[in-house]
Image 1 (tube, rainbow, N blue to C red):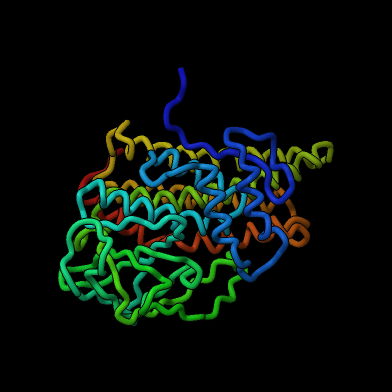
Image 2: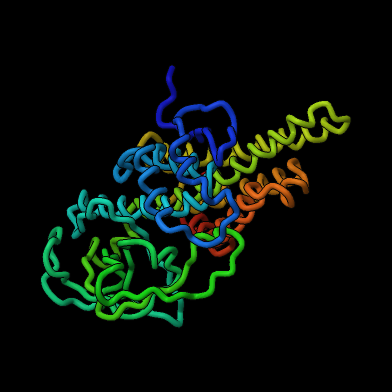
Length: 375
């Protein structure tokens, strides 16, 4: 009996080196688009963002309304090739999904221009505030003058100076609301904040200054956080973490294969078994989440967001252990002498910092105490 809608991580070619015999999707073209990062460059290369996003779309097709299992498979498989590339693709895909979800729900939305590149900027800082003010009627899908304007500063806008558009949250008189903004239009300026990070060095995350920038509403006040897709998007980030860990694990496994006849191989074999177990734990957690998101299983938790918190927590802990095991198996030679492995390790460390750790766990714990435990 064929399994339905499972989360898998396809393998292929990366940086000119075969990771293993290809399974599932042939990722050679996508890997070629990722390849410049493997040369140790730290500054963004002109055109790489566009090249990666077009290769991602060519590989996986239109995922804006796809099942979560397919979306998470695409993200994890891309992350296993290159975390910098998936850090470009994930928010682009999330933004297009948000626009599609708004249209499907009959909410205000925006039709993305052909060839546009998107981000999602929803982070907040207590000392910065972005406000939206109405400038005209706000109904339907817009093609004319923007019915809102944005003013203020938005922090943590990854690739804000390179993207063409973004879904941005701002404060209104009725609460936070999402808006579609042309980042190359009037009233938007990218602030060149320092970005000394060694991990994801090609994904600078500075601030954007808005000065009466035209904006189109995407959903009403509160809709962005209340929609089920918000939870599934949060799990999508966890799929990227898992893919990054699988990329490290594949390099570590190749190193172990070369040492198969060494006297200490039984120790390495034990580490490989532990690595396999934690990676499968994370993958099964994603698969369980996909079953709920796709309506094939009842949600055992109080809400979609509670399930997202549990899944992210499970994947985070598994990936952190997998990263440690991969380092131990590959050995210091990989961290010190393999630029691809060292960069992937640094990239994953920074990407995992997106997890809100104890704050998320405290939120989930409070929900479980109030609503009841599922076990």
